[in-house]
Image 1 (cartoon, rainbow, N blue to C red):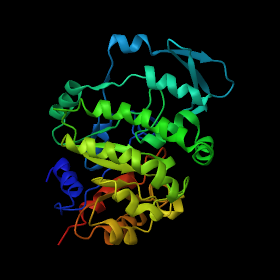
Image 2: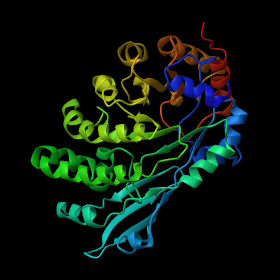
Image 3: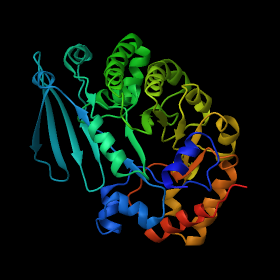
Image 4: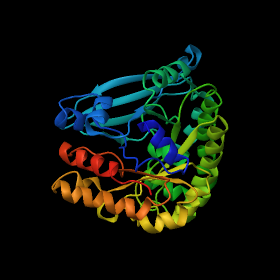
Length: 365
């Protein structure tokens, strides 16, 4: 099988020729620091991993941009690169401040400072259409790669799930409190963000995506309770899942963090795959064998590998043993893609090669 065929077989809960092995988003820091600045596709080829090509292209009309004009301003900061983003609307400007280091980025100032500002989002926040030509060109140029994208996040900074998107622009602690103090406002805001995602999905006809990502870590039980998930996450993400699948595209639900209390709840969304099955030693709660027993017949499982302890500071044999352990716990019957549980920054390329090579030796009987 090609890498793409192997990944697709697992996503459809079938047995490929051997255990698929890949990785989540590749960070520029890792590629520049440990791989000499190589591109992502060269990384997959050199490591012997099953390749993924991530592509997103959002297209806006000039009229949409007139009422939602984004301006960047560099701010002085002694430690981090800091940028204020101002969204100019016909009502008033909305601002968001992000900071950056060599590894990643994070929010210093959330967008929504007044709950009434969701009315501005409802009226002026544009719904993009999918860049079909860009996606299909990627599929044509990378026929051996899984073509993967995301359901659109909020402009500037966000994540694919409705709850996760709102957490990014309002703040997760305040958002959790609002589920008790003003639950109707939370649901109204979620519907506004959901509409933008559904509008985009309506334009996916003819896009040769293999899979789109939904969800986010703020929907994990490391952050929220199963009750909040059932009331404020599932009802808004489930229609998004269904809409994507009606376009002939698979959906993977990303929940970095705690998953075990809501495994069935996530599977009930109707998704094709779930990730990241973060191990206990990385701050998650996953028992791979138990997860396989509970939901392995319903969804493809992606992840489960402890990249913090087995991509650095150990021997290749240690890495190989962990690959075998993951395969023994979750590989039976197919429907499992071995992958680090989310992205990584520091890693020894020789250990990644051992990871890929051992996965290639995990053959289905």
